[in-house]
Image (cartoon, rainbow, N blue to C red):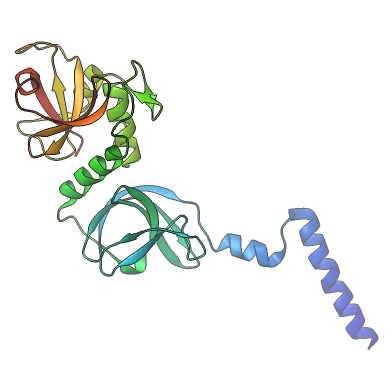
Length: 232
């Protein structure tokens, strides 16, 4: 009986010392050790089932969306929780974590997937006021909008101005969805004064006039196109 009390007392003291020195109980420390810090990645995955998108990288977080089976998505963060990899993805304009159990690595349609991620990231800001020098959802100018949207979509970080962005991307002869379009102030001009994002079907998504909007490239804008650029 005395021996058992001594052992119990020793174990209780050890736990108390552990908490005193670390501030974390042993069971909490084990839980923390089973979750790794999120790291940045740039990969594409296809969902093998319809899965829940969660606010954080485990099933304990609330659902923020649903990733449909068969969809290819761009994953830009990864972490490991209790032996399972979780990936942060963009889908239908929402960002969330999905379990790696139902994701298959792919390179097929990667360009389209990233392009759609860019458009989805920007679509939610349609109607945001145009503000000279603006770089946040309180107000954007043209290059502030493109750089903000690319960052939200997990793409390459773009420089601040339209001219700098033109110099930072790879020139292409025809744009794909999500690529940048550079414009001059006048038809046939060569000096970059404006930038937008190609949204497909001969349309551009950009901060122009008084707000962020989708517009046709016909008429006014196509006469002022200087070049197209991609980060992919």
